[in-house]
Image 1 (spheres, helix red, strand yellow):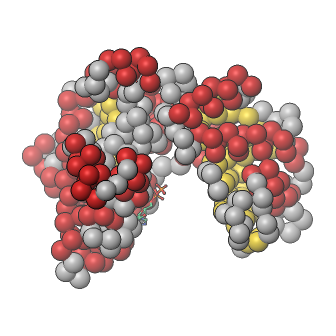
Image 2 (image 1 turned 45 degrees about the horizontal axis):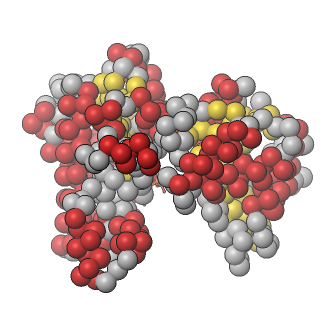
Length: 397
Ligand code: ADP
């Protein structure tokens, strides 16, 4: 069966068509600037050149229709007929406490996703628009929702509660949810598989370090803690997001800079992280490394602060897991930036972490980078959220 995986944003839509038997990606692409000037679909069929289709796209319905047209197109298509798509798997950001696993989409599920928009106002409404657009264009094809938060629902209360008046949890569901769950689930499962062990027998720390970054502690196959919180702002220092800080800073900066709460929130999400800390050099680690190597002190400071935060979280998760067997690095930075892995592991040397510098130079491949005598196994395990979504969609059928 062929599964169409959809990750829908407010003005973009990423897709992959995956063959569930071979698990090969038949085509992938992205639609950008939906509902704006300059809408564009970039479609990449496997083994062929990419195609750019520039045409006005008033809404997501039109975008989905164009994606389907591209998939069945005589020249750059990969299937003969729409009927070959057996199911659609949607990435949905917030499943709240309601969803602890993927589900097939019904009217009831759509209502729940909508109700959870209060917790993810930028994401859930966009995800729902994608679901509706696919339903309209592919009537009768089963659709599944795979939630970013679901894998973290096994956290115990002490890991997910904040030190706030309990009534905020009762009234507004203020608690830690965690995100990137599909990736943490996939990478922890793959880590165990590569090691030839059962995930149920391991204590794994997964470091998902991309533009957005989060860490999770996975014990006996279940998530017991994770660094992102009510929203994806908490935890690690990210590309442009601050991660953890003293909550009193919000009102202090608001007063000093004459900013509203929403404006401060915007600074924390879009102008902070390594981008802000480096004085605006970049949120991209390639640029930061280059700048630091050329003697830019703020870029160096941003990198050093980033390493320190990651290492501190990993060590903290030794408490969550009561020991650590494996640390797995994944996502854009985790898979590619050997300097991040090297420097984080150096800070963990006191725990007996030792890596092989030569092996660590490898990028984007599954590999064990720790030495045989390291107290903790350290690995690089590239994530594959789309494949994980396709697999979960098939499992639901
Ligand atoms: P997203 O959160 O958008 O999915 P990714 O996981 O794709 O992010 O990570 C993107 C980031 O990965 C880039 O911003 C960049 O910092 C980092 N990255 C990608 N390639 C490299 C590389 N070769 N060296 C260092 N960092 C890299």
